[in-house]
Length: 479
Image (cartoon, rainbow, N blue to C red):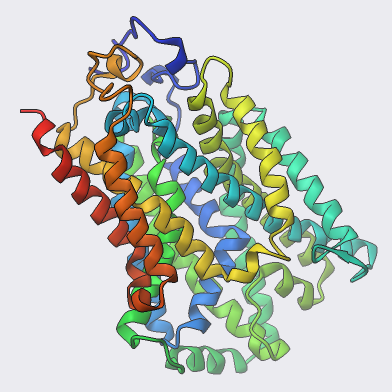
């Protein structure tokens, strides 16, 4: 049954509002281009550039190996989101509602809350990174630099950070269609600016750029566990970077006209766009080593040192737009749905988004002085490891337990006889599977004895969560 002929009956108001209801096909306007630009903006964010550049210089691998690892991660993520996106394309439901099938109509609040917390963390962090572009612009136009700091940020930094936080709220209240149009021109524009930046750096670096690229591609250094473990860590970290979007991808795919559009957008936006972006990041980072004697991994730092006011203004605005765009789509919309799912009768998606924005403001304000001290790779891997078991449970439940068929009526029903009511609305078997798998996947990131497995933490967490869920639920599988 599709949402075109679906009429939800006997609705429990504690499980339903208009934001969570199945989206009819007539209201689905996204094509492959919107999906492509969702991924392009996610990749192009300032945090994404910093992560990609860091991978080239931190693992002691050759540039070829790192490049291959990043592209492989792109294909892996593409497969993963095709799996989580398909049911929402078919039924038009967001991730929190989809989770009710595996976790229970009440138990789904737990994974929704976990996903919401992670998204709020990412939202705060990306808000900070977007604000660095605004700070660069203000410092360039006003001729200011440095000054007294509070929590590691100057007065200009705090003004920029507050501006970005308010700007994002203003953009969010305009609605999803307006945000999609915003992304559609932001994604291609960022690539134009990055190509211009590379051209300027290449001209300034001259013959020194190819030599520096050759040095990076030689790969010097050591990594605990050897080159195979280092390669796995690169792939695992990049997969973990997308983990927050992977699990709740249905929040976006429900707006797509067809599964074909979704798959094409995922292919162009993930392995293809990621390969192009990594190529630019590699050469630009190598150019900074030639020009400035140090490898800079933040685009705003690079642009600030190029000493070209026009480029500084254009690049600052462009990276600001790209980071804000994906922050809204990947880190604002999900918690707005997730918080709304906690109390649909009282919290709309808009109210949930505003709650998330307030909490995220304090998180982003602590990024420089506190959160960043744990390291980018550790931060990304930990969040990914926590979400991984939820992905495995959701996918295994839909494809192996439910055989790709859901009772949408039961997803909005609190009837004890309902298909997804389980025990008082909670599926305890799924919770046990999550707890065991999450304990292992997070431990693999931080426990020295399991350090060799850290690159596989997301994959192991997802596989273990899915396997345990299947074993515990197989007797309940549909015959």
